[in-house]
Length: 271
Length: 265
Image 1: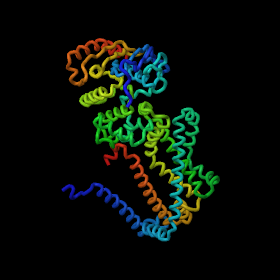
Image 2: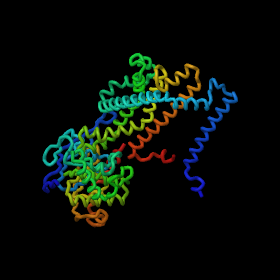
Image 3: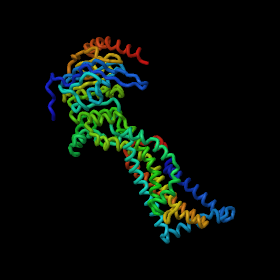
Image 4: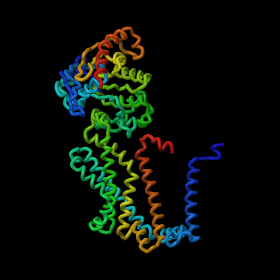
């Protein structure tokens, strides 16, 4: 097993990143501009912002799925070229392959790394057990609930032992109870493995409950981070109980003051 | 009580379907015997059954079934392989698909039957000309479905596989090919059916063997009983092929959620 990088080193650094897209009518839409962001190794950073502010674009830059028009992306000190091999990415959408069983889906990353089948299968079983899906190894995705599919996707991401975990509103589509269970599971696993996490959400409560630091993005176009709030709530946390902490409410009010302005701006700018 | 009187609702359906068949055949037989229908033009079920039985008893029909099966199988395989290959190439290379788009459209819109005489000239009266004819029918169905299947692959699914470390070859094998396979399989009944149409129509237009030839021969001799007997054998053949295709399809698509239509049936 790979050792986590020493704490304090910079896992992800974005400097002056800008990314624009061509619109269908021939214009240019600048999604992100002047983005500076640092994520320390082992840190859990939540990224919040109004809808359409380019949170996913930022994540795609770190993943290497998109390249910035200007600025640079560094991963553990070296400039990122192509796909970010030290990161895995938990998507908002269902991305399991429907023709593969839960176990085969979890194995996928190891199969791509040419790990022998039997070894890959053994590890996939162990990971399915860790995310609470023992006995569901041979189910196809359509035979699993939305929450179970997310667990399979989480196991699929963690089995390749990434140093950085990118998450794009992974639990947005789940019901409240399932969501809180998943959040607690994520925290438990993160506590054990100390991955660097960059977690995108539009839910401020989720952001505070999970993270070490909340970064607020401004409304698009040309979104950029406009505020940073360290979360000094004790760990290990329970996402349901931590909300009752008076410090939680205090922090929520402070961040919301900033975020509300951006949300309103996004709302007015919306076509 | 309910389970006692109706053990399985499908039994009732099967019984009704059989009753319809018996009724139609009986009506035909009676009408023919009473001379409401001229037996010269309409034959009668008992004569047809007797002819079919004789064909199988003497064994003369087997060579025709064998030839038609072989042509169907070859047309299906060659057409599918070409369709998958070209479909992939077009889907993965937008330049290629843009250049050839009008040619594909014209070729597909052309009534394929006009090619039959040319194929007979090029490939002779043997099975090759029928296979070539079937291929032109099968190719386009498989080609369009492969193209669609590859193009419809979700971007996020591809990105997810890439993030997990997939190379281009891995993507092809684990994501693109299975995804296209769903589309190809959904057209399996159509493409096998078209391969058979190619074979039979080809035989009908000029050949020395096959079920199409059998029917054509009978027709040339004004032998209506022979024509109907040929049709009966062909219908049985189609039924068997269709059952085979269904079982292959069920096996390959076992991961798929049952559709609502199937559930309703």
